[in-house]
Length: 79
Image (cartoon, rainbow, N blue to C red; front, side):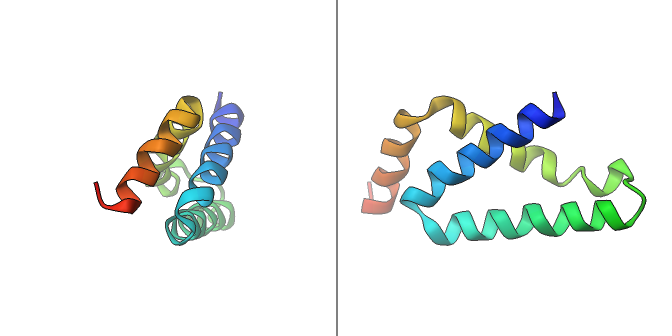
């Protein structure tokens, strides 16, 4: 389940990158930062906890697909 969520979140990140590249780069840097901290500290779950809401949001973005892309492009235009 963890790998599927991670892969879905990466797909959601690519969808976000199509509409808002700076936000996607910020989220990618957060994912890489907390993953590296978790890896170097013997994989404790408490260092991965800040990622869970972020990954859930990116998974939701990936699962909604085209509809979410239209929503984010509307926010970018100033709706």
